Every structure is written in structure tokens, then in C-alpha cells.
Length: 173
Image (tube, rainbow, N blue to C red; front, side, top):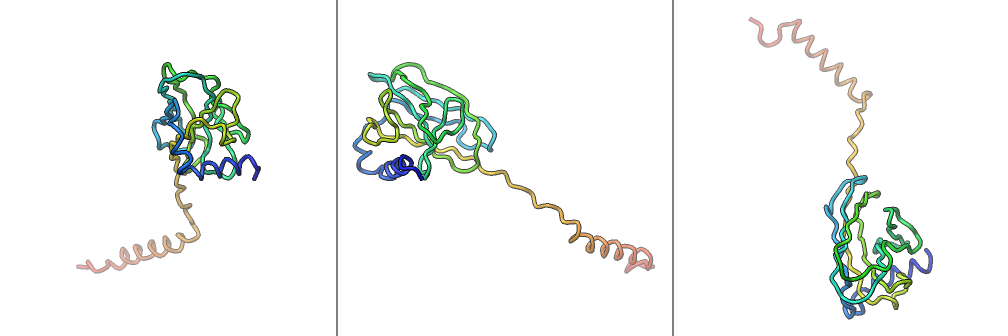
């Protein structure tokens, strides 16, 4: 585990009192739908809450021992890659499509820093991170049909049916 990833994990884990003192970010992150199958798209919407300044926006996989940043192209990067750079806090929402490429519960952390700031350095955070969850359950795989186990049962069933037909069974007149 890299030192930067450890620092990120510790700073997100220590989100309690220190982050409660930080204000909400000038953006809100919404994911629609929040539950999809892997390989399906979701809509990411960054709603601007207004205010002064321009900001770099990072979308990170929260609570992971390794740092992972969602790139503008929708891939994961182990290095800090801004999802959007120099974004004004006022204006229309930013809406983009992302194809969920992993199964499981994905905690997306919205981290907003000053342009050029380091999203891994907790002291550069002006706002508390905002976390949104995406659920992408792995598809269930049907149990394979085991012909070796079913063959003796099929043979016994056919023999039983043949015996009943040949002897007239219990319905003999």
C-alpha cells in the first residue's frame, strides 16, 4: 500500500469531528440509478450549489486501502486524476454517463480542492467529502447441470415407468 493511499484511507476514516467542522462542498453528487448490474450505465450529476471560486473535482473510491480515482473517461486510476478541472461553483449541473465496470458496493467520494491542489493531502481540503453509494451486485451464476449425477436418476425413472406400463400397475382391471 502506498503512503498516499494510506493517507487517503486514514483521512477518510477519520471523517468524524474534523470533517464535521468543514462546510459542505459547492457541488452535490447524485447517481441515477444507484443500483445497476456491472456493465450498465449510470448518470452522474454534479449539481452546483453556487458560491465564489473555481474548483478541481475528484471522484474517488472511498474506504479502499488503495487510492482509485474515476477519470473523465470512466476508468479507474491509481494516481490522482481530476474528474473535472477549474469548475465554477455556479452554473448548470454537469451531467455525464458512466458505465459501472466493477461488481460490488462502490462508495464514490466527491472531493473538491482548489485548482492544482492535492486531493490526497487532507490539509488542502476546503470542504468535507461527500459520499454516494453505487450498488452493482454480481450476477448470480446458475448451477451447472451435472449429467453424471442425473443419469442414474433418469434411468431409474424410465425403468419405473416401463414397469408400470408393462404390468398394468395398480390400475389393472
